[in-house]
Amino acid sequence: MKTTFIRDILKKSKAGKTVEVCGWVYRKREMKDKIFLVIRDSTDIMQVIVTDKSDAWKSAQKVTIESSVIISGTLKQDFRAPTGYELKAEKLEIVDLAERFPISKDLSTEFLMDVRHLALRGIKQAAIIKLRSQMFMAFHEYFRKNKFIEAEAPSFMSQGSEGGSEVFQVKYFGKKAFLTQSWQFYAENMIHAFENVYALAPSFRAEKSSTNRHLTEYWHLEVESAWANLNDIINLTEGCISAVIDKLLSENSRELEIVGVDKKWLNSLKPPYKKITYSKAVKELQKKGFKIKEGQDFGAPHEKELAKNGPIFVTHYPMSILKFYHGEDPKNPGYGTNFNLLFPEVGETVDGSQREPELEKIKQRLKKAKINLGKSDWYLDSRRYGSVPHAGFGLGTERLLQALLKLDHIRDILPFPRFMNRIRP
Ligand code: 4AD
Ligand code: MG
Image (tube, rainbow, N blue to C red; front, top):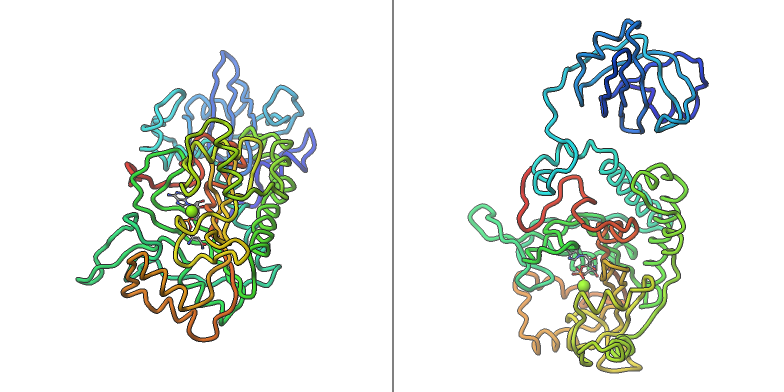
């Protein structure tokens, strides 16, 4: 197994030292008597110079982009080199001579998506995936530190949970099954065993929206907490986002630099966030000329406007546009104990609420909305055997990272994204 990585060499080594680099040829520039290579591994890049007098010359002439190589030589500090050092090659072993690599500059997004398995090697794309990995680490650390139990739910369901037409149907041994849209039904039952639970897992949405913020398979961070109210769940939302930002800032300077994210910008996205009620938000939008009426749900342009100056919690939506499980505000009947957290450009990123704990109220709402829970009726047991006040949220992890890194499109956040017109590779 490889134990020395380019990042370690750049950090620890001194000029004049002999080192060995294993990696892939990222760039190649040939001159009459010297060849410049840029070698890439999972951690960083290193400039290599091969002169016509060295033993490495013949291999360097032959080597192609994305060939795997082992190069040894001496390090020299060079401020013109992209990472501050240059390796003067003495030996160059070609482990595998790559065929002509299909990716070069100025290719269409469609083509890059077709060769996504190769495009992931690009250092900017790879840095985004590393930041994603770090975000996941921060979530796990945060919830473990706060004594949450990680407990997942299945992806195959006998009935869609969130309802609507956005559910994928699959065959399950001659029967119908559906891919999960949310872990929430399971979680609202699990809190009686574990009190505080979370899961980080894929959710599936058959939404026919090809926008820059919709995936058909996305990674959903879901949290449910017994004995918690709206404020508690808002605090947890802020806490875990704060943990992510802190982690990226303290451990991923280089990746942020590669992606082009300004640390000041990332710092400016740290909680606490502004809060506004739904009704106030509607009035503000009306003042700005939007044709929205009290009782209507927000669309993407409304969310964009509301989050124009930074992340914002919109709370207490009308019950008429909420789901049957949302709690109702006793101080303001007709409005829910819920929130959406909106981020600049991306819009809705987290959706959470204090839930309705009473069985009878939920039954009435289901009846009124003509919803038949069918095979999901076991959900109601959460209100039958020791129901407690509780609250939870679902956070779209790709949307969060898209907002933090200020990326145009959500597809870049996943190694192999799935959206309406993309199911390969
Ligand atoms: O708003 P949603 O549908 O809420 C729920 O599923 C609740 N049951 C969550 C809960 O309380 N446990 O989805 C939650 C979040 C959204 O706010 C959004 O960030 C993300 O999931 N999301 C998507 N992300 C990418 N592509 C899609 N098609 C998404 N749909 C929702
Ligand atoms: Mg929502």
